Image 1 (cartoon, rainbow, N blue to C red):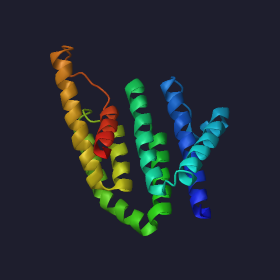
Image 2: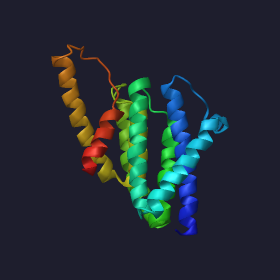
Image 3: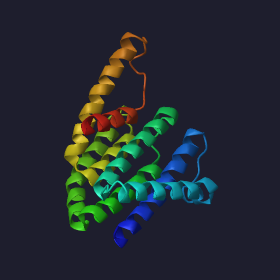
Amino acid sequence: MAGMTVLVLAAESFLVGMRIIYAVNRISGKEYKLNEVWRQRWFYRSVFLCMAFLGTIGVFLNAGLSRIRLLDLIGTYLMLAAVDWKCREVPDPVVICYFAGQVLLGVGDKGWPMVYETMVHGLVFGVIVLLFAGCSKGRFGMGDAKLLGITALTTGWRYVFQVMCLAFFLAFLYSIWLLGVRKSDKKTEFPFVPFLFAGVVIQLL
């Protein structure tokens, strides 16, 4: 494994550890600043486990950075789905760490020019999603928009558009179930990231 790849995986393990600890704290009802996460003893254990896991799949299973990047995307969406379901929020620190990790893995895998091109193409789509969230009067959360915007910057707008379409369709079916079976009110709110995670999985399959 090349030295640059090792450095990228080490940095990614650090960022994943921060995401895990922050998300677990939010689910358990605690909230820390991002730099306070480093002081928790479980943080360094999480980083070590992430390094061992990424090193194992990278060396022994011969998984390239592109596959590790995909696992990072799926794992982060699963993590945020759990936080959104429990706390009805998409924490900015987790999204920021996700973005940094995706950029690092992208540069290590394809080089900076390719990552830069993807970010330029995804920027317009990300802005459109943010404007849509701002005009939706709370019907579409700003946290969801930030997550989709960041994902567009790192994976491209076409991928995010497919995931969004799948997620909206699943959310539509869930809304019908809420209205028809649970007899919920039309103003009933529910988290959207779990449907985005389901869209990611379906798109992958």
